[in-house]
Length: 444
Image 1 (tube, rainbow, N blue to C red):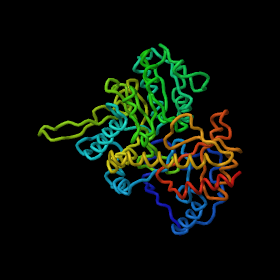
Image 2: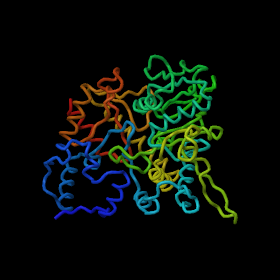
Image 3: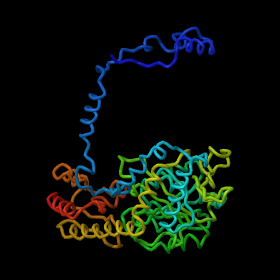
């Protein structure tokens, strides 16, 4: 027989009822119509734990995941290899259950892990200081807008977004800042974003590589922004930074991005990680927490929260942001991932993505009816013009070949109807790429 554990005794309940001035539990709910107080619930019979597990496993087996077949879908969430050491560290109780390191004397391990994460993010992006951290790349981008507005002391309220910034990032920026009176322009693609930057502009935001996977020199964007005193914000792919010139070297003022690819896995959409790095001169305008290294009274190394400008720590009206938590565990995963791979490992992963993507592009480009757009160099994603609607092709790939196809760009860009964004990472062996090519050929 199933049973219910109720922690309160009859005496406990009576004390609570007396405190609020009612005689019984029934009187407490007297405002609820009697006909709906105890409805007859049409529930199935109770199941044992073993039976529930079996039923849930049967439901889960209906899902088709990236572990069940080749996947060439990217567009902001990527399938990269997660070394076993990442989960081995994350599952340690002292990390898995710790929420936030408010007390440094008992949180040295967590604080040091965050400090190491910040250090590696700075090295990866070419910036001077990093926080730890934000919910995802989209919210990190929105926080970059708020930082830029604050740097200009609210006197500049124009934000220029590249049309090739992730569509969801652009949407989150607009949602996050609604009501702030900002003038957000550029993402309609009507004219070059560098032409839109003026003395009213707080920041210009571009993506590197951009949403279509293309690599370009960021120098013109930095020059256009700095010419009028605006900030250049770059949303970067951290895996690409394993081999590409870091945004800081181009003159970026803030670098943000999605850190999911560094040890977090796809996880059906979350939790993810938004990294945020900037120049030291803007550190007090940056949201999130910052861990610093110091020494104690005995001269031993220690770690503390140097800056933590959130509403939980100081007066709400003085906070740089009202974001209420960070993805501490996912930041730890990224730290372990970067530490495990090191400089050479990060570069090797990036090179594998680059070369495999170019092999796939060359093979697809040879198919009748398909054309790979090559006006700019690309990293691990590239655009394919297809001979029929992308949805039809993707349905065929999944139903007949068990392949997860690319992203339908027509969803976000009307002029890119019948264009597919294909993603290839180190997780796609040559056999999977060849299988995709065969399937695309059969699809038409």
